[in-house]
Length: 368
Ligand code: UD1
Image (cartoon, rainbow, N blue to C red; front, side):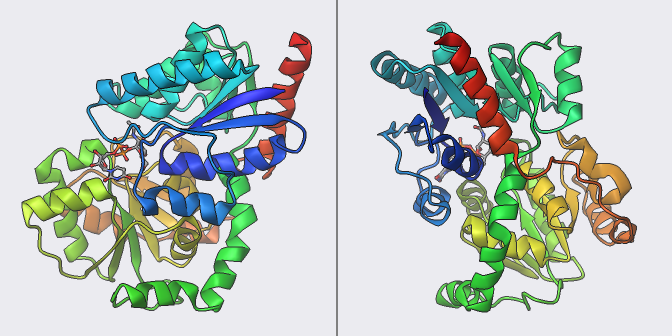
């Protein structure tokens, strides 16, 4: 079977690695990188670290307004589909690259396979919510990481082609956590920090907050961004922030001063796993990192009004928090009773990639 897979943004490279290695054993995968993320530390490093094959096509679309970015991907992906004539097209998650790929294929009547289907925040102003709802409604196979995702699709009348597989990000964590820990032992992470002249807190003692901020809903409202950084400055432990380029640009423009905060350039996936596993708590507006914190048994505070990963809220592993300095400080210093509860396996059994591959091949065999 021959499929086209679309990737373009950082979390999609991580999700693509487990599936590609399984599918490529006996099938052909044409990998298309849209170029939505293009900085070396937002893209190349993930391909190198995770052994993802070099993309067959690189569209180089870069950053622009959402319509322009999505439209230019759509045009280019359509050309590739017409040339390659695949049996299906696979997309991950909820980015503009996801929607562009799904739409191009659907209009040419090529089956669309959506990994991470059924996630909902029910906030239609989020570009990610727009992308995931539209993609789900034109997909032929919908791979859901959780039962909640299956139920969400059911509420919208989508029941055909829905498969519960568990989460490919869990597959990725299981494959990589030991490699990440070994690199720490070999001194790799500390050397990277030292080379960047970064004075870091102890990376062993679970004695720092690990924070990431990049969502448009937090960065576009400058008051929110200032409040977030003011709270970081007042926290009871040092705050380590690998900073997304969009957020760095904004804090430079706003002239925000840092106290108690160590800013890092975006770090690789393996390094991020280590930093997450050893943090006292993660404070984030990312979707994937909420899950990774849970999987690595680190508590999380999510600086948003909603989460797509509602399961992580059980037992207080993850707590949603409005953007208010006092509220943030109160939430990060809460009692971590969650650490005393056994953790249910919320995201499958670590073999999501295999289940996805099996389901796609079944459809492929029917079409032959
Ligand atoms: C995108 C996804 C988001 C995902 C995130 C992961 C959409 C709508 N959003 O958000 O769901 O959580 O990726 O990181 O698809 N930039 C650079 N270098 C890069 C990439 C981006 O400098 O390599 C800067 C540019 O100024 C750009 C801005 O970041 O304008 C935003 O990038 P974009 O890809 O549009 O969205 P993200 O915020 O990264």
